[in-house]
Length: 571
Image 1: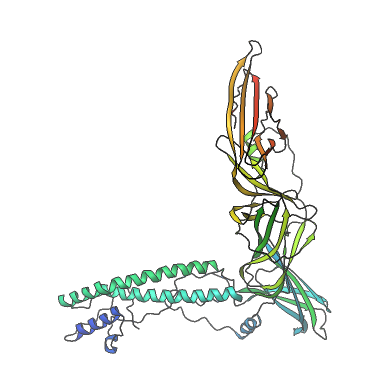
Image 2: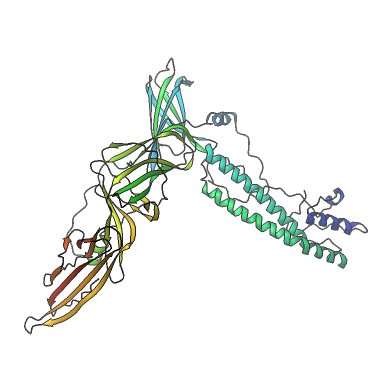
């Protein structure tokens, strides 16, 4: 197929001819606009030139890095073939063809430890026995061990490696599709550009004919171009979702002190940081039985540059890091602004929790406990590049349902909760959980164990409510000498239970505390409240009968000297 070279700043103008010059150009133009083949004699006119298809307009990735499978893509016209590699370089590339496959992989939340085990025959190099392994580009903390041989030294050499595995193949296919779409869009642009290029000496009849043809052809061409452009945008999103691999690796060369007479077993461990896992929880509370069913799965990912075909997999909650504590800080007593002190205090509940989706059913993998950590051995072997979901375990927890109310002027909801203690075993890692009650979905929340326990929330119970009634609010001043001011509040909390069984509601209110010894607080209630100084709350445990009501009363009185600037506000 022929296309006008629309990148030419100015179309070529042929010498004017008499007779057939205008009809030939018009026939060629009509053939291009309608998509039908142009006659051979029309193709020879100077206004028409060939245009390459499949030219990519994507920017090159990993500029300056070693060539990858995407390196052959060009922008616009071809830039020419790369120079052929020298024989030594070609041999090196051929030798660095396939990564050494892991035997075992232990995944941490932010990385992995890889173990290789191979029976190898040493090769001779410069009169010495050498063993070679090919590791991914991100391999760190490399530690080789040779059974049956003594290591004299080992080195890591960068080499070029073609991207391998499922992710690399998917990316190659997506890039090929993008190339095809870009070529089709370029062809449409060239055909539409012809409407701006009239042959020299065109008369009014030819112009009118071309206008009629443009009115018929251009809308269809533009519609097709918009469709292809949308498809290309979707392809680019898919391409961005598949990480581009570096096209590099590390060759591990182990030099032995003596050449062994037979193959030796080589074990090598290294760490990677472009892989890891995070937990996903699915909970189903059964209030009638006092049980909670919990299923745990793991979202795992790895972009090592290869598929782990037959590796044994394990998940561990420990995260390798620093081995020793930081130095003690200086303790300097000096005045400073109160705002600085408040800014330095970390909020009690300011904790980062990874966001994850909900888990499915589990295969029940037993956990191995190691001190404060948990480790799960996955029975299935192998892990392809990309993201996967692994079923880990499921359990039935004895966690009777509780109801929690934190009433205020605009808050009447009562929340369903449960608490589970891990006892002597290590806690599970924090994550996001999907919650159900008797199989009905109620929402997602944070799974956040603390001090060997985890508090589970299942949303507001529409059948249990609390209403706040303001009974007293007074402010007055008493005495002439040593005058004092006082403030008094009282509330009644009416709890309603529409459930067919009795419920136990924990009602919580903030505990008023003073930082001035001249201020006196008096706290009373019916029934009398309990206090939790650490949490800063007052609370009542209230039994509410089935389809019945229970009331709680609270009174707070504050007194202070009249000259003390105090304006307390009750929440």
